[in-house]
Figure (spheres, rainbow, N blue to C red):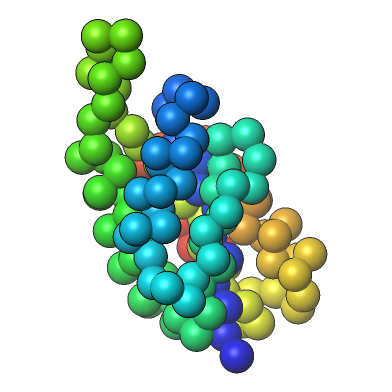
Length: 120
């Protein structure tokens, strides 16, 4: 069985976590698991999704969130995300190495350019 583990970071006010989480749930498959990972990070575990499908889905999520504007105290705020993708078992041997690899590729993406998708 193949799994995709994606960690997302977005540049947004913390008070909007529930809204971002709902948007992620609405834009993923019923079999996917979306949850808050910590701080401003979310994970999407996508069973049976191949690497190319994960990249396509991640780019779609990135575009949807980028086009979603929010009003905070009268200021229009645009949401951007950085996405790190890891494919199990191709890129890791167990859940711990999967999380570690996804976290590392996410931070590489964020440090390099932000608002992008990187694959381990």
